[in-house]
Structures are given as C-alpha cells and as structure tokens.
Image (cartoon, rainbow, N blue to C red; front, side, top):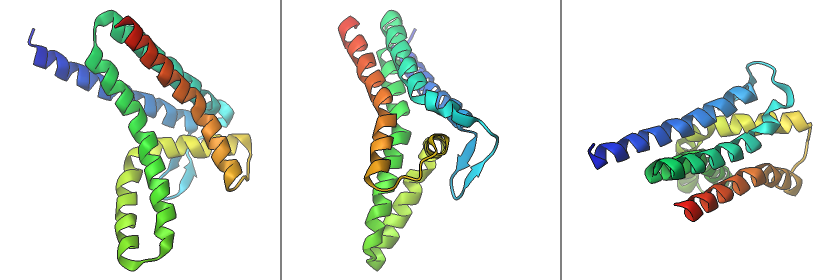
Length: 169
C-alpha cells in the first residue's frame, strides 16, 4: 500500500475523529451558541462530563495509535481536538481588543473574530451549557477560574495521551 495514501487516510480519520468529538459535545450541550445562545433541548448537567470524555478519548486514541502505528492519525486527532478551543480563545481575545474603538482596527478585529468563531460554535455551546448547569452569574476573574477548571481535565488528558504516545512509540 502506498505510504502517501496511508498517511492521507490517517489524516482524514483524525479529522473525522475530531469532528465527531465536537459533534458529540455539541449534542451533549443541547445548545446552539452562534449569534444567540439558543437551548435546542434540555440536557441538564450532562455537559459537565465532556472534559472527562475528551480526556478519555485522547488516551484511547494514543493507545490505538501506538498499537496500530498510526502516528499521523494521533497528531491530526490532537490538532483537531484543540483547534476549536484555540479558535474560541482567540475570538474572545479579539472581542476584548475590539473595545479599543479604533475604527479601522476594530473592523479588522471584528472580521477576524467572525472567522475564528465559526470553528468554535460547538465549543461555545458546550461552554454556555456548562455555565448554565453550574448556575453561575460569575464575572471577571471568577469566570476565568471556572473556565480554567473546566479545561484542566482536557489538558491533563492531552498531556497523558502525549506521554503514552511518546513512551510507547
């Protein structure tokens, strides 16, 4: 079998795994957070489990990739798992930067924010459902701390999966 075909197949599998993970989380949230935050169906606090599912899937992918010798699949999956989170963070930072109210720069940041918000719709939906589930009206630093606490299992799962992958590959 052609190695290029094998690598391209692994890339597609990694992309579809990442998309599948975020679709699962989006369905778990029961929300659509794009222009408005709309509850599609009630899910309750199920979304609190998402970071742990994310971490578990990262570890399973690392074990599968090591066992099957699929290094391209592992790398692509990890990238696809983290792109929506990074896009959301960039979009939020651009939102803060737009408040400087310099006409040309604000318009450029507005367009960039729109570009970065598209890949992060599922992430934003999960995030809003999480905040709704824990019933917080927190603002500022408390909201940032809650957000970081939500990300900790995801980061730990990713680090553990990278360690498994590096140690065994």
